[in-house]
Image 1 (tube, rainbow, N blue to C red):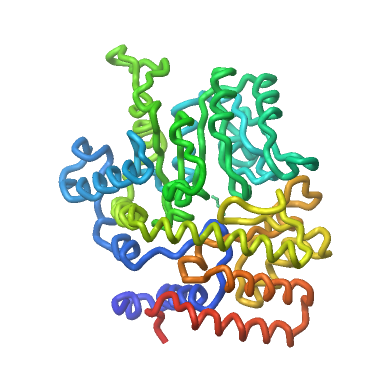
Image 2 (cartoon, rainbow, N blue to C red):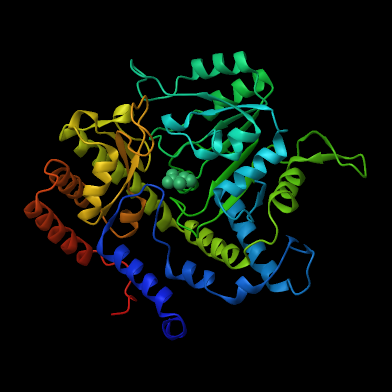
Length: 435
Ligand code: DSN
């Protein structure tokens, strides 16, 4: 980074500090990961200079022949990875992908049914402060407070809710739900009430690609995702369609009178519906990441992500912590701290002092605000990329417990920081931070 170092030392300095922060601490935010150098190299290229509105071979700008190659590679690799028939790799983010889903399937004011944000859902699934809750009539299903399905979704209740509300769309997907989804049951409910079924698989896309969780594509009308979480690509989004891609569903093209296919609706909902020029450097990086995810080593990585999350969850429970749904099927766990006398906000701050990064998170039926919360969310994708196995994760849980049980004790803090420093040296990350 010699050009940046001399032209803009302030930005250079912030970047160097962030590289060191990532190198020297434990990253447990469930939605984060560490991309490869190849993915980063693809992003840092002159492809950022290129406008390419439209699709490969059908652009509104000249000079697109090489970015077309990159986008075609991203599309073909994504289709192979998710065994689907159609994909749009242009969404700038998960929220952008989701905006296109709403635009394609709903009219403002239409009712849709999604997982409650405070039960693990996502901002773009109908939060009152997000466009999805402002423009559309958002209704929710949730997880069970107690009983045999405590912390899990009861599909009979989702069916009752759908019959009661008659939504135009049902959404699945979550940012803090540690269990898998029954897509066939969701589809049967959607078909019964005449709703579209949409899965936002942002958190679990990598685990689904690796064949380790249920596959939404055979059951959902449309699937959206980010590309940077368990999928370990650049920060961006994507939309996919499985068997429904050729299904017309009643929208008529104004000029020709022809019924539009699902795929056409989603392409035009991305551009020109919700975005302008795609980020071609990021699309090239997506192609690189998808190729990486097609390798057998990605399946091994993803299996380790799940094994590590189970080991971490079990260790937390052994130390007396309550977990939402009492465990995990995927890459994350949601820890309810109410029996530990510490809020999510306090826990996040105490752990950050020890170079352990987590995020405070609402737990189902939380009595605290989203700024305080009663829980923290922890995930394994990033440290698994770094090489941590089950033993290291169990050790990390013990260190977290040391901090959370003894907040404010500087001796404990120094001892834990020392041990974390040793762990980070044992599993090095990036070797290019400047001195
Ligand atoms: N903000 C992401 C997360 O942390 O889960 C979801 O978009």
